[in-house]
Amino acid sequence: MGGGPRESIWAIVTEALGLAPGASRRRKVVLLLVMVAIPLLVVFRDTLIDYVMIKPNVARENDSNKEYDASQLPFTVSVQPENGEPRHWAMVLDRELTADEARKLTSSKDSSTAFSYMKALGGHPLSYAAVLEHAPKRYTQQQTSTGRLELSDTFKMNVLSTRSSPVVINDWKVTDITCRKSTARTVVGYPPQGGTTYQGIRLHIPPRADEPVLTDDAEGQGESYFGTHYIEVGGGQPSGGIRAEAIAPPGQSCEWGISVHYNDSYQKGRWVQLKDGKGKPLRTRTESVPLDPRQKWVFGSVPWTQCPEKPKEPMCDLL
Image (cartoon, rainbow, N blue to C red; front, side):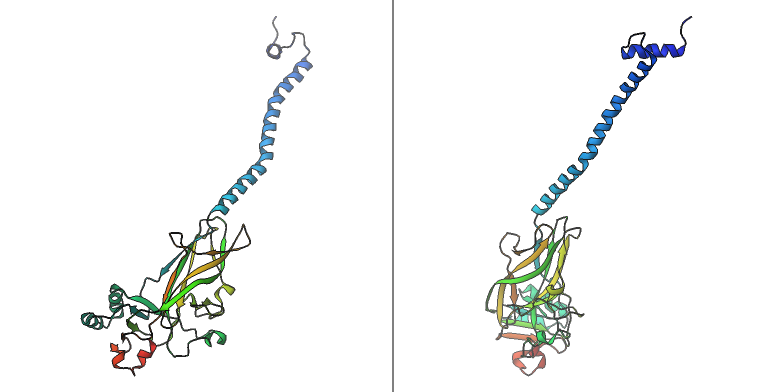
């Protein structure tokens, strides 16, 4: 009689392993286990190698990402004049108004209408600077002694960064100041009746001690802005910005540049000169009211008043 199923299986195994028909069962079992174990060992070896190589590969990839991130510009900066109408303002124009233009200007009591009309004629808008009532005496003592409120060229500085790691701007300085006598011939003012407060920073041209200073109506007003604050971009925070009031010397028109200091994750720190969209050093224009304008109007809390005709009008002293 033929062998049972078990004998048939061992016959197949014997033939598959290339053993002699008379090989012992023990030898057959050992050889079978070896043949099964070899592929498993190969898989284990490959898996172990892949696991061991994970950390070096991740490290190389991280280093590559850091190198790429560090090669990107730390930030870009744009400086734009404040577009909206200030709460209280003055407008300077490089020429005198004609009789028709003067009549049209003074025909409306609405400040927005007058503001838009003067801007359409080419006027340069100025804002009444924040009154720093809570600033330290060392700063307020530096203010003008003429009794006039200060007027500023107001702009917004916007900072953008595509870096994945943080970039911190923690200081700035004014550079390359050039000033000349204002050529404005006409001044129109909508002065405030009391003090105003704006959130942001202020500096004079040239800067005074500790400027730019904080103008917020809060603790720290009048203190050096970068002494306690900074602008952070990158690292998931792509943009930042600040409102700045720049005050030119009386009767002067100035242009100046800005250099900022930043720190990042790849170097201790560096000063960089801000540039415009064409790659040239950025120039910021700051005007003031001329000392001897040919035409000068004020309105708001008083009807339209031509100051040369009413030199004793108190509102005229605010311009």
